Length: 287
Image (cartoon, rainbow, N blue to C red):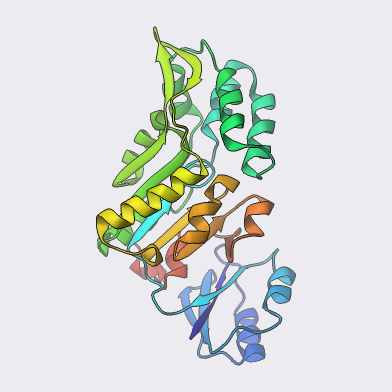
């Protein structure tokens, strides 16, 4: 059995849309996980026109289809930049260094898969040379905001015995703090090298990129004694594609076009609580 999921911005999901789709595809009884926001219905097989319908509704709703079996996951594996937080940390550091526009352009191209991740990171970090280490505190305090829905996502899954890992191509100086704010069990990221209280313009080796995120998926699931099918992974950039396509449920969240094109599950209207709706949690179940 399959589940057809519809998630929209709160208060915008129309009952008629849900009923019309269910009737057109011969689905089962619709269940509302959150009134005006999230609904779903079971379906015996995927309709041939699913992608066509999804494209026609892209401005209104996140329409996804996936197997019902095993939908509740035991672990969440998350990217940080533009996923658990609303910014790219390196872009915010670059603003403090006066090279914001240049670095943002490189970041956007790297996240869309147009540039080699490692090379793009080395190039951007070099532009931060001689910034005082204290600028990290400034950026965290004044420029970083959490992505809506992150706290209930982690709290709800952990209430059910889930495990949460933050794996970023960004920097430990940020993941350690974001991890603590949200309640992650562990975090992995790159290291900004510092000497005499200033950034050296170099990043520690080896660089944590796309393959390192896949390795984290393999290593953490092995440690926990669970399978990759037990994981919901979420990210937005090309360096997330490895873990997104390997995890049992890989969700492209407000992702770059090239990433969405390679992921079956896409969320553009919802926030991080969409990962709970996709697992079958109702809003009343959120912690």
